Image 1 (cartoon, rainbow, N blue to C red):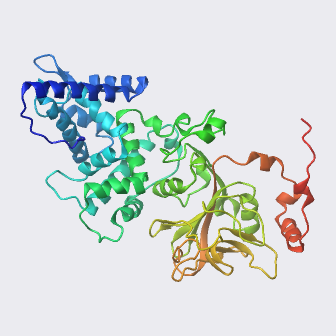
Image 2: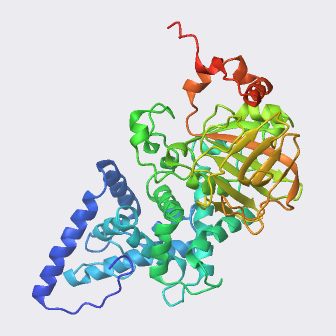
Image 3: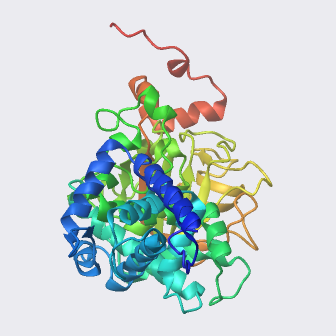
Length: 481
């Protein structure tokens, strides 16, 4: 079985030889599953934590293991994980291993680490399950939720120890962590009541349906056993030279990304609506090609309360996440997967979504009922003027009026496009604060081609209204280069 293996071995000599061979193969497989750099790091960590017994055999005991991880995880979690390592070690008694209870040798150490970092999702889920509570307790959704909060706390601690994360003026608190964990276990519970008993099979299924928790778990364990800087390193994000797009980047598997490795924002000028749990959740739902880089495009704190300024900042910028806070304290918004441009009809695709961040966290993806993903219009007498997502004209899931400062979120019983309820405190809301974030690499080819009309929103809207083709977008002077 996995780290949770609990066996009593009583076999003859031939069976013991078979176990010896299988354990040797398991160690070889575990050892080879790591890169050479990872092997050397784990060997160094084992030697740092280990001491020799009276027979000269090197072993790791709980106290040094706990001291190594105490900055990151609470003692109860460290203790449960160490017990699972001891179970691996105990299974080796059949091959006359000279270590006592509470001692972990090098082989069991490597096998344990491979179970965490290199084995299947099912095996990782089993480990996570056994970290939720002591073995003699029934695991409930309460324990799972608490463990989600524990790993989120640990991730934030590790993030702030990185060179880049230490510079970010981003925060979390108990209430934000609670909202994140509540959202996480919704996929686990489905229609079950909360609290409710949870089985290992349910946790395994949950890991597959909500992989963000698996990523969070692995990131924290990597920070504790390898290096915290790996959380934000650019190269593992599939990037070269920081965050520049490359062919390798486009083809790279970035399924492990949790936080962007690069924020383009002057944190001294903004008190963001986004906390760390909110960014983690939103980034998880973005297309993978956009998860590595966030760019602040607009903030009422910096750019003032002007719809024209807002539209100017978000057009020709590729995918954009818009975050609003109303005067009732609700934080919500929408993600536009294609660049915003003024049109008299809906645009966008099924990668768009709406979201709520406070008082609860939820993400609402398209239902397939219609394709009314995105709408932006200005200066027309016969059509709604403003920015909207989902629903239908004058009945949007998320709407910002052209006369900056008000909007609506209608969903009775839910938005037809996204299945979202009313996101704001009241259906008709007053805007308190607004931000827009470009995600992924900016479409530089579009930015380079901007003309006067691209920057004059009212002129562009007028041409759209009268049905004239904007020749400055259809034909440009060639580059002198």
